[in-house]
Length: 80
Image (cartoon, rainbow, N blue to C red; front, side, top):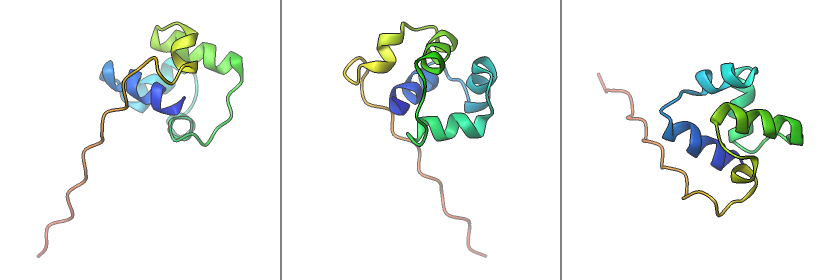
């Protein structure tokens, strides 16, 4: 589910902070949700779906969305 949440958030070009505000949680909590580290209640899933403006089944069905976009790799710090 975390992958679906991240995919939908990124499709809307929202930051974790923006979705967390709409969902009513901290961005750190949302980060752990997207990482799959949290067990969410159906109520929390419904709130996330509402914040993302999607039907709840979209979050529950792993085949409902394409794979999450790959994150850009961070560049190593410049050597001095």
